[in-house]
Image (tube, rainbow, N blue to C red):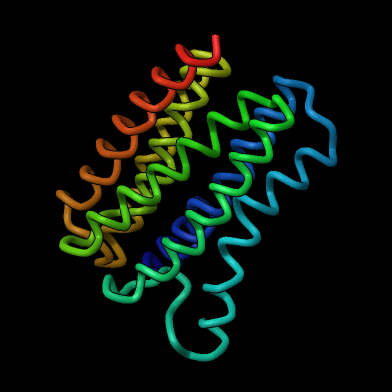
Length: 190
């Protein structure tokens, strides 16, 4: 029962799913159109998840890409989609989305590099980074979303997916990277 609970928490609060929540909050706050929301979900969640689902169907990986050595190609696909979206939103002058996708792009590259030597938690990174972004760019009251790290930490531990250091590493690295990139980009744009 606990493993089942942990599995579902890990799935529902995965980076791909939390990204949809982040984009929904941004759409409401920035009054983006439904087309912008759908396009953003496509680049942030659907396209990066597609190669994982294809390889899952082929039996080459599990949904959480548990084996560290198999993660690099998915990081590369994901970074490419984030990079394309970042350029699109820059050209469209949708600067909050440009900053978000640029942050996701650099976080993905950094986590990929760390992952070559150490299995960092992408689940905690996927909550901490976007929540830091929302707090800095959209509304400081969204800091409350950091509370979602608690069930993610517990679930990932219950599944024996990560050590405490890997969970904390994902959180701290992602929040710090987001803080630096948001500060750099907002000072450049504003």
